[in-house]
Structure formats: C-alpha cells, structure tokens
Length: 494
Image (cartoon, rainbow, N blue to C red; front, top):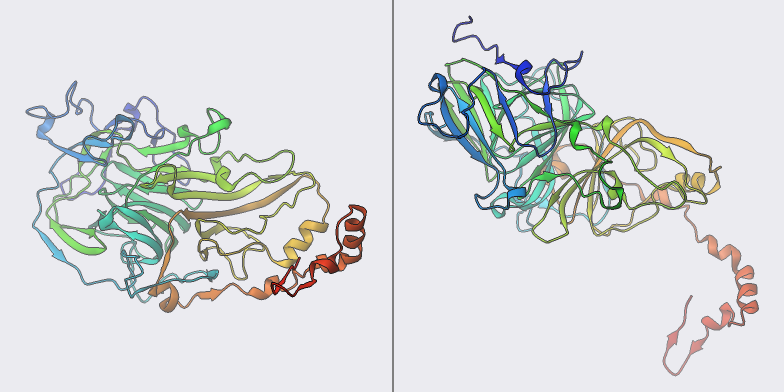
C-alpha cells in the first residue's frame, strides 16, 4: 500500500457496467453517453444505497454536492453531482488575490478600453509556444483573443488560446466563470479532474464544466490549443429535426471519466477564476480525493473523428448547421449563444453546384481555428495553431482562384478536406477583440482584400446578349434604364 505522499491514483474501472478499453495513446477507461446520470466508484460499495447524504458514509468519507443549474431548473436541464471524498473542498486556508494577467480578459463590452471592434476580416498566424527559458503551465498560458458579454451577467463567451510548455504540479484550476471547451492542437493533454482522468489528444475535444477543479499535464511536451469559455450556458447536442434519431455527434461517442483518487495530504494551491480575476486558495490535501460520485454534471471528451457528416447528395448547399457538434442556448428562445462546428474529410457530390462556401454575409460572428491540414481559400496564412475571424454581416468567401476552379472544374464526386480538421466558434452575439490579439501577440494580419480583386463584373461582358434577351421578352433595353428623368432628378440604374 503506498504511503500518504504517493500521488498514484486508485481506480476501479472494471466495476463499471460498461467502460471503454485503453489504447496506445490513451491509458484511461471511460463511461459513455451524453447527458446521462452516471455513477462511478473506485472502491466497491462506497456509493450510498437509496440516498445521497447518509448520516455516516462508508470509510468516513465526506458528502459534497455540486450544482450546474438552479435548484428549480426543469428536470431535463437540472445538472448536479454528488461527490464522496476524503476531505471536503471547504477544508482550506483561505484565498489570496493573484496579480492581474494582462493577457486574460473577461469583459467584452465596448465600454472596456482593452477590447476593440473590427468591421473587416482578421487572421492570426500560428501562436508561439513558450521558449525553453521560461516555464509556463496551462493556466499561466491562457491568452484571450475575443469574446462577448461578461461572466457577471451570465451571458456571453470568451475565445482563448493556451500556450504551455510545463505540466501543473501541486496546482489545480477552478473556473467559476464558465464552462471550458478545450481543443488541443499540438500535444496531448492529461487532464486530472475530481471525477477521474481524461487523456485528450489533438482531434478530440474536452469540456470541463463551470466550478470543476482540474489540472493539466503535458505528456508529449510543449502544447498549444484553443479554448471556448461559456459564461451563461452549457453545451448540449443540437436537435436533429428531419435527420431523425442519430447523426452528427452521436451521444454514445462522448466519454466521461471513471472515479479515481489520490491520498496526498500535502500542500496544494487551487487557482480560482472569478469574474476574470485569479485568486489562489491554499489547502493541505489534494483536490483529487473523490472516491465515488454520481450525477449528470460531469466533464467529458469527444473524438471528432467520430462525427457523422451529412449533406446534399443532389444539388446546392445545406446550411452550415449540419456541421454543428455542440450548441449552447442564449437567453433568447431559439437563438444559440454559441455553436461549435467542424469541417473535415468528407464527400462532395453536388450536381450543377458551386461547391465551396458561396459568398455570404451572416448575422452570426465566426471565429475559426485549425487543428491540422490545409483549408485553401480561407485566408493567406491560415495554418494549424492560427485563427481567422469575421464579425456579423462582414462579407466573406473564397479567393478568386478558388472561385475560378469551382466554376470551371469538372463536377465529379470527390473527397474534400482530407486529413484536415478545422473548427468554428459561431455566436449570435457580436465579438470584441482583445489587446493581446490586436497588439501584443505579434501574429495579427488582416485578410488581403486583393484576393478578391479579380472578381470582376463579368456581367458587363454579356451586355449584347442581355439586350437581345430583353428585346425578345418585349422589355425596354438597358439604355432606357439609364435615361435621365429630369423632372425628378432620378436615374434608374440597373
């Protein structure tokens, strides 16, 4: 039996009714499902039978409850979990405010002088991982790029990157502001949570929900990735409508940790994020001492390679909601605060169809990042580890070269975006951009408008044909439409 200073976790994965099998790049096992009421115990018989808070728990464990929704939320939206742990979270030595991190932002209202608006497209070259002469862990390496709202309003979101080269030691993180969707782009993340462990590789996502403690180790060395933080909502699966009972991200492909715990009774620091401020809480025991738990407020991960793409098999495009993995509600009915979409290898078969994204102006704001591969025509310099942004109603679309290939090429069935994974954070709310993204990162570059210069008015090459068609239809010619109406000083221009 290891001593109290041994940090090796105890677990009992074999006790679960169903658990995944370990693999070469992931040693852990998981329960599967999305939104389930899970139960997991690392020692048999620890979970109370028929109640949540017995007078005395087995092995003198402490009961600790945690809620992710109001107590009176509808049953389908009520999120909670019961934890049975060696020492409760309340056993600590108090909080100390940490120095401000100038690269971490939480207030995105235009009244904040540290955020900016942009009417045009923006892009960032891949962000630099810290050099070997500095030590930066996951928490210290979070840098905010954009967002909307404010956590104190319980509405909005933030978009961050993390740039880290060191594992967290006896230090954990607890974000009380919002849920964090984490997307590693380089290097796996070994995430230890109160519920158990997650190994998250590039191509997978992890969601650590608001108020959960976790720490991150870097098994592959320096790591880089993206984070979307939700202030006022939780991720759910999008409705499938006419697709029926399955498709897109299927619930059974989401994975939740099995209980495991440590005996460590030494000093730990828990960094809490509260309204964007960082505070350190000292305690003389590990936060990862949960022997058993049950509930539906849990962390989880998902392999995006399991996403079931759907699309048109005849002609034209279907709206990009078909690429939605997760969505989060806003306070307005039927309007999402955030959608998380992915674009990866799939078939493209439309007949008589302009196959790239058509030129468009959307009410939503779009923020894109790339995990791997190439995504031609988005912008110059859009590479893995970088980013791209368009505010609402900003016109955008592929370059002239991509347009030309799409309008003149053979329309044979083909695979597109092979070995590529690109994602989009989309929101119904406008974004503002941080000082770090606009000034300090050194990676900002604007989309080059010259990529569209050759999108000429080709209609003008067909004026004789147009005149003939108008005449055959018994309509006035183009010259009539430019006639000067002197009595009203109005010119009819087509």
